[in-house]
Each structure stands twice: as structure tokens, then as C-alpha cells.
Image (cartoon, rainbow, N blue to C red; front, top):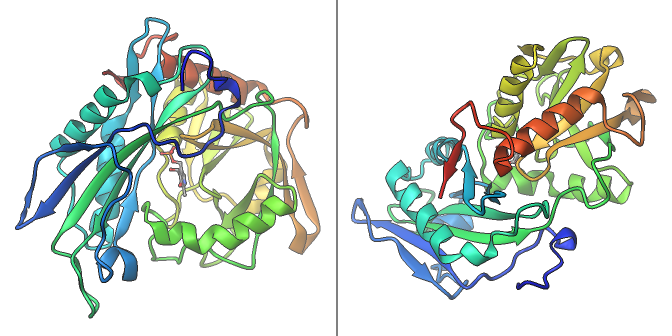
Length: 339
Ligand SMILES: Cc1ncc(COP(=O)(O)O)c(C=O)c1O
């Protein structure tokens, strides 16, 4: 990547930037943070991450501002969520100081891979925690490896900020009612992978999952939270099986800031008929407006506004949040750390 890189068309794909950061936990303590050029890690064939799913991860981004400074958005929330994930699957938690040391070392060693201001491209950061103790019987690991790597990624909306279409999934669940849906562990993504590939082949941007117990309330859209605008209210589901999205938490604050009511509650699928706008939200896209939600089992299709244009509230929230992330809009909320 260099001055001639076409940032606008960069895919969301892995690039070896030449520097990843690691920290190991063994003998009951965290070791030194080390920087590596090699992007291969040696893992024991019987490690718990390979057999018993002791793996969790995070996703966050570094943004380049007009002032050329590198900004991180709410990274402490990612660090805290990583630990909720770790605790849920009996893994060692990563102290916030270790997370921060790794993040600083990663950014310091990958400055040239944070794309220029104004391109819409960003540097995606993937923290990953795995259990490395060899076990044959089902047990937790005593040893852990925490890795952080970075990859520059192009803008999510390569053809403009346009609405997409989602489809209600009734044949599979990504999470169980009291399972691991509320945390970011690899198994959730494996459970949803076939469905994701199938709905994409059918032309949808993602699958909408309903609550796995009753299949009546909206849960999430693929790897993103769901919200809708109903009159003067921002509504978003509560459920024990959805991942609490840091983007969604931020959009809720911004919605309040512009005078909307915010309701976090169970949302019946049928309530979509009364909504004016709908969207998926997450770090990758910030927010991705939805034009239609198709429910094939009931031969129903809920639509929102115009198929070619995002609604006014979604557009406003998107501009506010991306503006804060790039530093164009002053951060009144304490979300930004300059690195
Ligand atoms: C299942 C799931 N839901 C929601 C989100 C959005 O979360 P965030 O806004 O913190 O990126 C993600 C992405 O991390 C996800 O994987």
C-alpha cells in the first residue's frame, strides 16, 4: 500500500501489514507485549481453541482525521466486551492495560496502514484470544494467547449510502436462548455461516434472526444489530441472544441528542409494518439502511421509504457518527482517543 493505493475500492479483506502484536498468559500471569512480522502462530494440535471452541474476538477501527491524527472509537468498550466473551466460555480475561499496550504497539507499528482522511477507508483491528493448553478431556485452558492484528479496509458503501434487503430466517438459529449469542465467540459465526452464504446467494444483504425461543421477536441481522425509526422513536430489540453493539449504543445516544425517544424492548416482527425506517448497525458499516424485510414463510414483505435512498433519520445518524469518528464533528461524548 502506497500513495497510489485506490482506497475507495479496497475490499474488506486481510492484508499482512508486517506487524502484529501478541501477549501470552501462562503460569498465571501475562507476559511482555511483542511485535511480529510473521502472521503465522504455532498452535498445539490439542489446544482447547481448536477442539472446544475457546476462542473469542473483537472488531474495531482506527480512523484518520483531517488533522492527520489517528482516532480510536470507544476502544475500552471493545476491551470490556472481549472480557465478557472470555468469561462466558471460561477463558482468562485480558486486563485493560494489556489490551491498551497491544493497541498502542499495533498502531505505532502500522501507522502507514491507516488510510488517508476523506477516502472512507479505515484500518480494521482484530483482537483475538485463544486457549492454547493441550487438552484431550473437556477442560478450560491454563494458557492463552492474545493477538492483535490490523488490516486496512475500503469504505463499506462502495456505491453510495444505499438501502439493502434482508430476509427473515426461520430454519436455523445463530444462537440458543441461553447460549452464547450475547458474546463474540467464533462458534456463533460458524452456526450462522451456511445461512449467511445462502441468503447472500439469494440476493439479500443478510438474514434477520428472530428470538430463538419463541421466534416472534426480532433479534439481530447477521453480524449487526437492528433498529427502526417509528415516528419520533428509535426502537431496538432487547434479547438475551444478541451481541450488544457498540455502534448501536452510540446511535442511541445520538438519537436522544437529536430529540428522538429511544426504546430498548422486545420488537414483534409484525411491528415493522408501523415503522418508517429500518437499519442494521455495526462497526463495519456504521449503519446500513434496510429497504425491505421479506418473511417468506408468511408471504410478507415489510418496506421502508424509498429503495434507492436512505431515510432522513438514518442519514442524519450516519453523518453524525462518521463525523465524530473522523474528527469532523466535535466528540461531546468522550468516545474518541487520539493515538
Ligand atoms: C453478531 C454481531 N452483532 C452486532 C455487531 C455489531 O457490533 P459493533 O457495533 O460493536 O461492531 C457485530 C459486530 O461486531 C456482531 O458480530
